[in-house]
Length: 159
Image (spheres, rainbow, N blue to C red):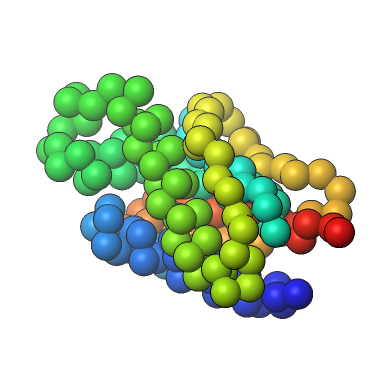
């Protein structure tokens, strides 16, 4: 079994890699562990099953989601993107981060299948998996401006 601290490193390093190389934004651990996302939020999630099962989620404010979308699409104005573009971009962020996590865990968990990402909008959104799940929760700041939450809920497949 991999230790919790190992999952923290894999998860955080994967998110940083994706943001630096694919979204061209800085992502760093938040100084304030109690930071909150204010107002409307966008939550993207992707589930996985196999040797390890669970759910990865990325939650940020609407303005952050729009900035991510503009960076991913190479667009300069929020007026040029739709809500559908933003949902697609946040879903792809989840897909890319989970793909990176999967690659990093491959030696220990070689059988992990991913779902299609799901994106919802609302307030005070949370990710859940039920009893027996381990949780890695990272509060991060994107571009020194946007409070964001990353969560990875998982459990090893019982034999």
